[in-house]
Image 1 (cartoon, rainbow, N blue to C red):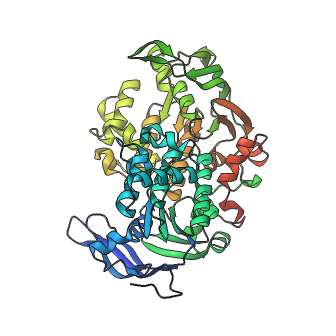
Image 2: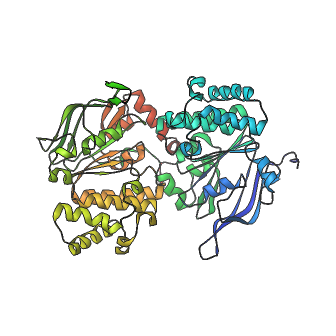
Image 3: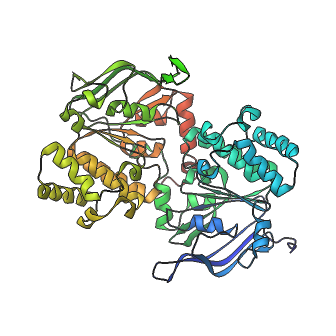
Length: 549
């Protein structure tokens, strides 16, 4: 059906979507949503996990997950009634008129097929090109995406590319058929700030050169501020605010929007993290370096690799919180694993309370293993899926302190209470918990050992703004109560601003800047640090300074 002149590219009118529950009832997940989108416009959809933003985005392609159905309202994309469209009509819509860039590029690419071939298949099957034409167009797309040496990239498998490169390949595939609408679902969630900025610049360029409209789903308001003209704020499946980005960010009307904005990094001296607080030296790292080296089955001599960490010097005092920031591949997680004893340094030395600290846990005393604990990025993969929460918490209490079952269980209940969770959680399995609950269990397990040093590795990266705030609040309460020191590793600079008085900035394994967080963030001396801050403060330049949760 032809689209009348002046008709918006997307018209959504009182759309409602629901899913069938186990009881047989239909549970609404999107309710009474209305908006329009013109050609070439960019719309951001923001909200916490479970707000319905991804469901709404997928509906633009006429796609709902199993058990989902449209409950009411209408949705038209380029004149096609998506709600009532037949299978062939939806097939003509997807890829040709509307294309999607999913959150995880690694899982959306076929792992055993070269990436060039995957984009070629889109061009052959959807645009009817010959294999030679498709190969030439694929290389053109890779070049437009800013991929280095497109011909070489095309021959690689997904696992041989960086996260940013994989996301560029997926964007190239989405653009292969010149769609009028590009839907991007959390396209930068797994990327560090530097790579995120590069991908967002690419998206802005694509929009400008292709004229495609954008729908960008994210919980990061900095992303919306950088790319979008208008925004929808969703909560519990409904739109609570809608309008131009400057209006919503500058004068939010609802407490929920203000809460989301409060999670953005706003560098304000009156709200800077506290001064350095320490009661004496705890951890000392001097000249520590690390590189991966090993033997391959066809090569018997060690294979030398570039240094992941190069002569790192750090001091952490008792009760002190140190932030570690940098892009992916800068060595942040490697540093945390070295301190935790999971891998051994190639050079340098570490001291704990002035005494030598063995490189790996094998050489450390039981007391040293107890006193240095680590919380990992993905709580679900760090918790045993076959063990209940109770077992996960009771085990360290029994191992380190010799408590009997009843005493250990009582202590586990106390830890859960400190994290705002009831005793009933002890009998649940990790998969029965939300992401925020899983991370709180991981925090409780670490504090069960009564550590003096806690290493937190990207513990909020997979959480939305409101859940992140809750987790950080509980973490800080336990840290202050126990006086444990913390090394907080993250690419989210707003987390560092809230909890870490001191910060170090890593780039390619070297410390390029360090000092008090308030000073480093307000007056960065290194261009690399300035670039990280530029990417992390987009929303704050629009938001009113008085915005509070």
